[in-house]
Image (cartoon, rainbow, N blue to C red; front, top):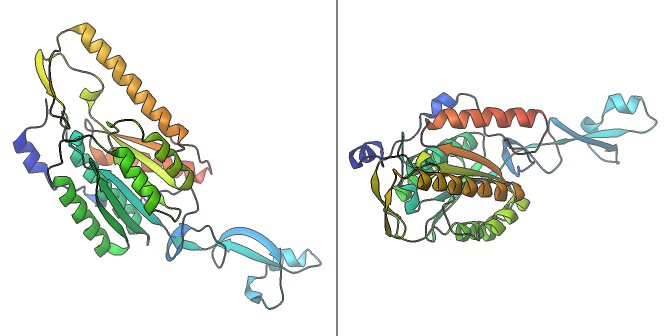
Length: 315
């Protein structure tokens, strides 16, 4: 059964207590930084603290760049190149479709999606980077250009909260359309965080793979436990929130529950496999557990991966 309407109203607008994230940051594996502020690793070379390479000194260059230790051991003069710290552009691609209006445990998927967007924007924006958003349901509803600073982040989260609170249309989720919009819009190599339940028609795999090739992409999959296994609660009428179609099911039928569980497991496996092929990292957020501990665990594991210098997705 879904969360009651009274409970839904009480929770609406709730944002996570971001103070518990402490000094954690969103780990970025690639070199994405471009702006002159921020502390992410840049793809360019210039004044900075992170070593990149050495090369032979050219007449007229700043003598402060000379690597004196290497020069003393050679018959030529060498300068040290570094990767300067830069701010990155990050985009939240957020699903606001009707399928997120479901939750049988601690929260609705819609509320967890908003918490995820708010936490991610806080972690990224407070490090001098810019965060924008693309909101979609049956179509792209709103595009919020990247903006930096605390005021910009609050502005972004406020708009996301408004978009996710408004009633979605009864229509199929246009995940592929949202991803194609991001392909056209985001030209500079960026961090993309796709927040959706992936309960959408096929066709999203190709644009997702293209985004994974151009950018660093994290797919945050919102999951409710009843989407993976039906409990034995007797005769129940299920309704598709996007089409309105209803189906009466006798959940006491053990064979039906077993078939559903097998089909759901296969669908979940296929989604994960498609994301791996697209070189996209998957983060599963379930409504049966508090949101923040799940995010903190992911950030810690991803940070360890970054420190070890590996680029493979976290299992």
